[in-house]
Image (cartoon, rainbow, N blue to C red; front, side, top):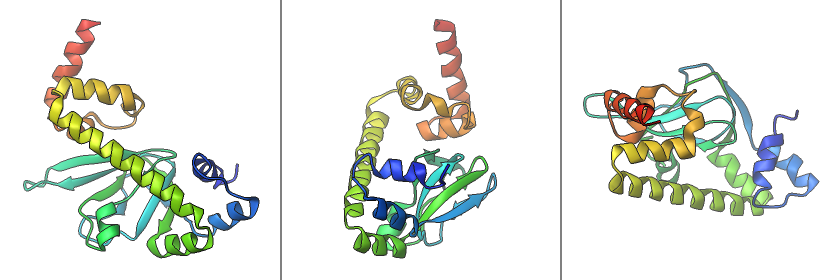
Length: 195
């Protein structure tokens, strides 16, 4: 299978690419591999681009004032991840992105994305749609965190992302939900008894 096949299919969910454009778009991405626990982006450094995950699982997090980690995102196959604030404002990254499994990603640097948009203008449409979808997802997450109790947030997580539970440690799921691992265990035990 062509390394870029899933990437092209992802693009074609929202735009139509000619055979020539499909070949051209590949030239803007670099294949990068990471071992478990490797950092794709380090907090406090400039984030230089976006990662499309081909294989593996990563998470983004920031450290609290007591150096505890707060998970903000997960990304698996066919998902994108970056520190958008660092990219847009060219400021140091607020989050770190770390591999939870051996991971292969396609990396698109900021400079290469600009060249790609010039060469294939419709790619800007794809990334606009991707950005809008991410913004909507982020807004939903904020609304859920403000309007749902911890059990409801966990049930919502399981409904949307239950497939992550076998790939991500429980303490990271708890962090993502804004609760302690101990409280997540209590919730899970209560739910298993209700079945």
